[in-house]
Length: 165
Image 1 (cartoon, rainbow, N blue to C red):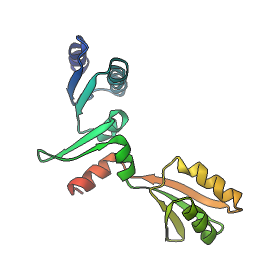
Image 2 (spheres, rainbow, N blue to C red):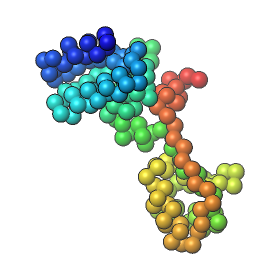
Image 3 (cartoon, one colour):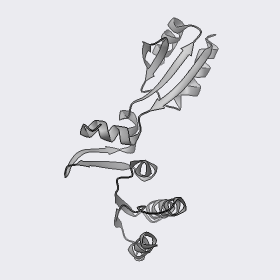
Image 4 (cartoon, rainbow, N blue to C red):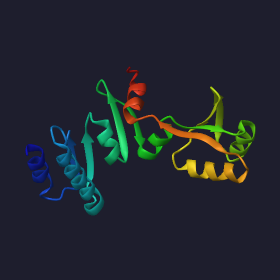
């Protein structure tokens, strides 16, 4: 109740800029969703700029459009959501009926490809690319035996950035 009350008091005067420190700390899942909706509404409908300080990185990834990563009291990196998505290691793994032909087709489409353990790895491949890849390979008579997607999470990116484990 304290978190909800604090947020309610903070938004009474419809501020242009709002600073929130751990806004979902101690809330149940329903409360977290409710606070997230309020924050999004404030930003999108009322144009409020919101600075959120939080250790819950997965929660931030659902709200933030820009990140400032702080370690030991210093800003280590400032990055937009789009830049973060590009920097986070993401890859598509493929096992196909013809690796050589697959490599050629996907290289022509601009994908960076490596072969490792009998699988082709498309470096910096996004989830949205999977449908395009599948269609273009099918059109060339190449059959996909396996396709998977892996993305580094915000927590992993943060720990890599600060040299954590």
